[in-house]
Length: 110
Image: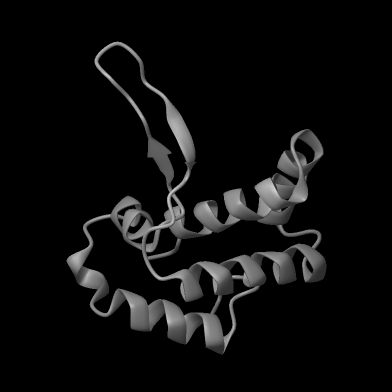
């Protein structure tokens, strides 16, 4: 709950989905389990990334997205929000929220 935009509801959902956080060796394994990671459609000669996977708990992905929207509105000077707004200027706000969701999971404090 120390991350901006994460309140008791998101923290409880995150904890309930992960169950035993020690079973994941890195934040990247947590991301793969939760689902906001890019998919892959590759063959022997081509390497192609696709849209994010929809694996994992959809309720948690939804709650994380809502937390990102909240953080972008309530904490405009937060460095992560500035990073997301730079992405939103290049792409759009929805892409920025998904990127922020991924960024928050992959760079969470230990």
